[in-house]
Every structure is written in structure tokens, then in C-alpha cells.
Length: 375
Image (cartoon, rainbow, N blue to C red; front, side):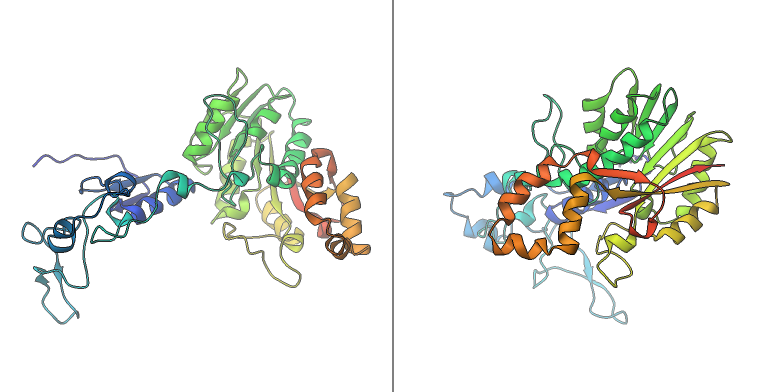
């Protein structure tokens, strides 16, 4: 029997039916390299079991066509560790299938469940709009923010304000934008930098960024942030360190990238303003560690000799809105007057990067922290 040796990957998923496919997709979206192994034939519930075709009771209910043929191959089974595992020769309550997509229907072939691409797609509210021809839109996952999603505009502008602040300080430099996501930040940095490379491990984000933002001054590479290397003057690493299992090891790696004369720009949310009042952390499932000002400063100072810690705050209309919420009871007023939807449908899309400000001081009230780190 011929043996095919595959390249090493992070995860191997055995069985790529509906459940296995979802596992593969979710793991790949976190940046892991995934291979799915499947031996069964392909069954497409959308077509093979489409109404008005009646299911074949003899084929599926009696002859178990969607299930493993136990006369040809089987598995061993036992109820306790002390027993001897014996071959399973008759179907019982455990019915192992062997078809890709077979779990999209009942094992008897007569209870079709709708797993069509249209049914599984997220609502348009959470997908990018009006992308250039040939550029596939990305969808909100809760892990990263996106432009061109009106409902996400507040968070996009909040991130964009920091990129614009950094762009003013990296003019003429070679810059790496690590964990660049959709790629809009790399484009902003390229407005002043001599060269920008955006790095992201997520395959969908990488392909989108490459197709949409590549220019003579901007390129993209698919890699993990803790293994990427390159010759740069500055490294930008925004809103990602809270996702990192070992931030100390990563900061050591990034310090090596910027060398003795470069700068590292790192941002992270302020847990004191992100988490509910009295809570130690937010409910964001993607965050592994969250930081207050002292904790973030302590982490950065352990690896860099010069640490400048700044805060991102509301400005202009967002500052006025925050004042109305905290001092004037605006939450109660707009609900009582029935203005909630009309007001925020107009207010949120109008938010711009100018409605945020990066400045020192009042760190305990900051939305996000921005650390400028030098060896």
C-alpha cells in the first residue's frame, strides 16, 4: 500500500463531516494549520436529499447506506476497561457513518436538515459591504474589527485612530504590522512609511488583505507573529497581546526584531473600562489575559528599557455622548422617547477617527493602552 507523507501541521482532524468541517474552519480561523482526513464518499444534503425526492426507506432505513458497512470493516467495542474489545457486527444505538456530509441528514435518509451555504451564512449586517471586484468580503467573528461594516464602525474607528497616530511617527521607515487582520492598518501606515509588510496567520484575512491592499509599498505574508522575522525599523502590534498565551516570550521575540534602535508599538484594551463594573475581566471569549495600566506597564518594562504608556480616550462627539450617558441619563431618555434606533442608526456610522484621542495621563479611564517601547 502506498503511503503519502504530508507536511507537519498544528492539528489533524479525523472525519470531515459537518462537525469535523466546523472544527477545521474554527481552528483555521485562529491561525492554526489544519488538515482534515476523510475516507468516505461525498454526500451533499442540499442536492442528494432535496425536496420533493422521497427518501428510499429500503436503501437507508434497512440497508443503512449512510452508515459503515460492518460486513466489510468494523470497529471494536467494549463497555468497560476490564472487558475484551470485540468487533461490532450489528448496528445498535451507536451508528457510525462514513460519508462526507452524511451528518447533514438523519441516518435513515429522511430528515433533511438545511446546511446549505445560504442558510449557514451570517446575516449581511456582519459582513463587509461594497468590496472591490475579486476581493472576498470578510465576516465579523468577534476576534477582529473590520471596515465597511456599518454596525462595527465604532470599533473600526477606535482602532483606526491608533494606526493614524503611529503613521505620523514612522515616516520613511520599514514597518511590520503584525496580526494585521483585514489589512486596513497596513495601508494607513504606508501613507508615511517607506515599506510596510502586514503579517497574519488567518488564511481568509491574509488573502483578503493581499488582494485589496497590496501596492509597491505594501506587501503581506502569512505567518505566526511569534515566528515571523524580517529587517524592520518599527513593529506595530495592536489589540492582540491579550490573545497571547505567553506574552513574555512574544515580547522578547519582538524586541529582537526592532533591534537596539527601533520601536515597538503595542496596544491592548483597558480591562477597567472593558469589563463590567466590579468584574475582573470582560466576557470576550477570545481574550486570554487582560491588563490594567499597572499590569501592562509591568509587562512591558520587563522587556524594554524605555516604556512610554499612553491612553486612547473619547473625543469630540463621543466625549459629548459619554457625558450625556454618565451625567444626563441619556440611556433612559432615548428609550422613553422612542429614539433609540433612529438616533444610533445615524450616530454610529458618523463616528470618525477624530472622535478618539491618544494622549498621556488618566490611564485608569482610558479605553485602550498604547505602549511605545524601545530597548
